[in-house]
Image 1 (cartoon, rainbow, N blue to C red):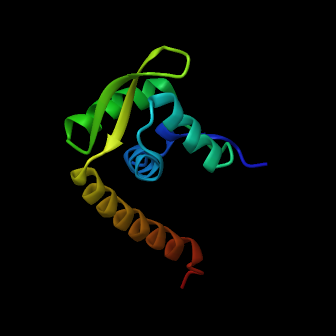
Image 2 (cartoon, one colour):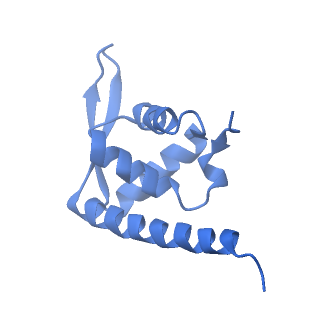
Length: 114
């Protein structure tokens, strides 16, 4: 079974994961974002509150997501996040960068030496 990784161990991936999650399932509150990432990654990626909420605040400040207060099914106030048009553009750029990075890492790992 793979070891669980926290997203703070994968520098630079949290924005990408949050933006992608919101593209697929918005609007969501923070806990639902973290749960989605954990479930889809089959428990390999775990987003800690101490990383997620500062990231959401920073991403919202960039204009990539918007938020609004709402009531949950249990009558609790929750902040729901959605992707903005700027966020969709940023997600596309982040996905391109991630693809380039993974191709480069794969080339290094496949190198048999000279």
